Length: 173
Image (tube, rainbow, N blue to C red; front, side, top):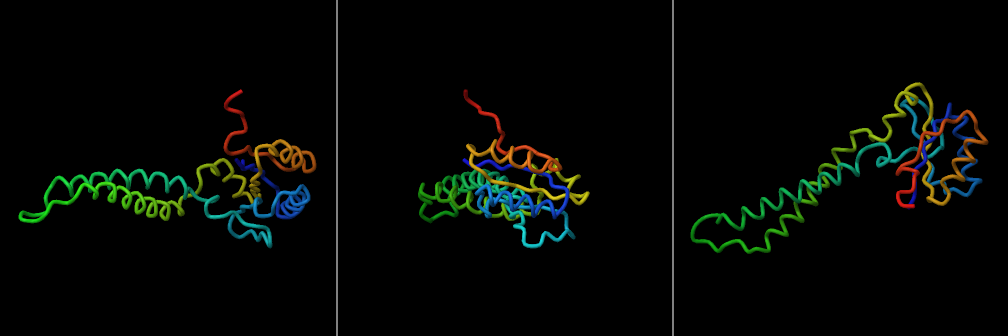
């Protein structure tokens, strides 16, 4: 599973140099993304994706659960309350269909809505980004976590290490 490392860079020139170092360390260019405040030109550096900048996936999960719950309620009401007299009752197959449709619709609506909400993992970096610094996010396998961290912190002492997500510690010994 990949981990996301966060580094706060002082400026765009440092971002170019660090990006070059990541490429020389054989980190794929599609695994390195940069985030800066609006108005700062990153040039040809890869910008952070929508899923990295926003709470899109968290919204997707919440929406799917809530949509499935509402689908269960709607399906149960459709089965147990007849629509009107003199009609055939709704079959029990309607409940799983309503759960599936509710889950899909709820997930889609909330993930689209959540793209306007900044990512909660980036809150600790907002002050530095507002000051004009650049945030670099690097996706690396767990085995290369310490290697990439040491490479960046040793070759660029001006860069602040901001942590990793999910956490760096090992859960089980």
